Image (tube, rainbow, N blue to C red):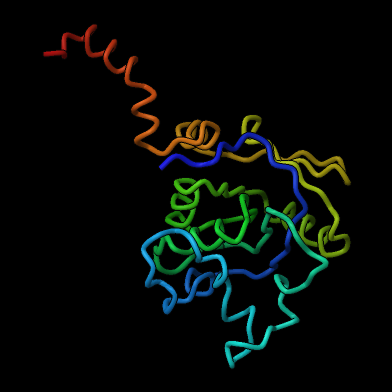
Length: 201
């Protein structure tokens, strides 16, 4: 299935300064019964958003604070560790996030994120901490993520921070392709290459 195209995103951020957030915290196992990607957002960080009774809202949790909003989640290092469940990415995306910023991501989570249209932006730890503090101090802090240029810009401070991404995955995100879309789009080039190499039947 094709995804939204991602080139530039400008948004405020939601800070979650917690390290080692695992996929069971992102989406508890008891909510993994569905097989489609829709509807997982309502249970994102479910055990943190609600008290032990599962009904009462936890007003101390950041997602329940109306002062903070946006399509960018800024979180502590080693985000997405634990099990390899793709549902964690589905929940983050379905909730409305399009970018997650951290200083380190678990490898499987990072790949799942990119494959589902969620951009993981890895920046140095000090830059991450500076951004978290800035957003906590001013919830209206705006961040500009430019995938084409591979930069994260913070207009309030003038900072421009570069980030790395696999070139193939970058092209897929920019064009809204999944892996199959990419191959279909490259069909003419593949046919031309095969003809040159004498590989066609």
